[in-house]
Amino acid sequence: ISTKLPNVGTTIFTVMSKLAADCGAINLSQGFPGFDCDPVLLDLVNKYMKAGYNQYAPMSGVPALRERIAEKTKLVYGIDLDSETEVTVVSGATEALYAAVTAVVKQGDEVILFDPAYDSYAPAVELNGGIPVYVPLGMPDFSVNWERVKSAISDKTRLIMVNTPHNPSGYVWTQEDLDTLAEMIQDRDILVVSDEVYEHITFDGRKHLSLLTHPILRERTFVCGSFGKTFHVTGWKIGFCLAPPKLTEEFRKIHQFLTFSTATPLQYALADYLSEPSRYLALPDFYQKKRDLFCVGLKETPFEFSPAQGSFFQMVSYAHLSQESDYDLAVRLTKEIGVASIPISVFFSDKKDHKILRFCFAKEDSDLNKALDKLGDLK
Ligand code: PMP
Ligand code: GLN
Image (cartoon, rainbow, N blue to C red; front, side):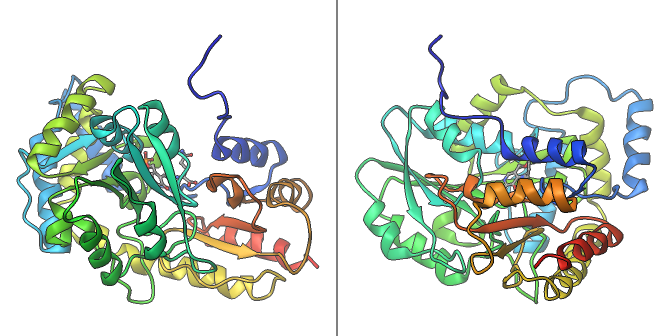
């Protein structure tokens, strides 16, 4: 049979989580919290389910949740959004990314992707007939090389896909990054999809700069967010897309036929839960402690690293230790020492080995300590 993604296999997250489970390894591979969410949030879902909020939600999202999302955006970024026309609730950021790309990318359009990038971007582009144009990020910090972006832009460029804080590297965009992007595209017909699922997870006093905060970018960007990351509920698959009215209109045309709407009781529960901003404003401190614990422990291992700026991932390099590919090493560490990680080659367009592993530190401290003990035994 002739199929559309002949070269795509099962995502590495599924592969490594299964291997971790099969081996009884500590799973620092797939990015999900190893602890539960606030019981208050669970009680709220229960409350709304029992109160009969169990049928289809409005296509664009429950109004109360859209309003709370707009309030959060105002509080955190100082940006006013119209919750009617600029906020859409979706079934996870993955849906938001796919719907945004589908809304605007036509056959033959070029889409600039940074390399490495989260693994769902390129398939979303290709399934829509778009052509990924890869711009390598600068090594070793994975910053954006703007000269390279400039030379990648052509008359066919329709979209640029941004991810800050970045998965897998944790790189956080600076004001200069935002300004340079805006300047580069302001006179062109180029849109932006900005994946900001780790918006509330930044470290060392750094602030996440949403692309919404830049007046030029705000006019042409779909910002994709996820409650999974912010409230430790990745299994709920609920997120949002923020975009100007014209773009939101196009976005909803896709969303309505992709999933139509998102789980109703979850939306009501999250609307209530969001009314207390400390619940998301506490996240940087919460994760900074975990990042610091993990990085202090990593110093006792043979790996080289610099602490992540954001996200809940820490990359480590082992080029000085072994010639093994990152995939082989990730598999071996899972099987032999019982710690699962992600080989970052999977995020690169050419799958080239860079001898870097990614660990997720969104785990119980006890599991992080156990994993560090095991990694400390490596030579
Ligand atoms: N983008 C990035 C960069 C991610 O790391 C993830 C999930 N881990 C997603 C999107 C998907 O988010 P969701 O689970 O809300 O679909
Ligand atoms: N985004 C998560 C990660 O990077 C995984 C999400 C998924 O498994 N689809 O690990």
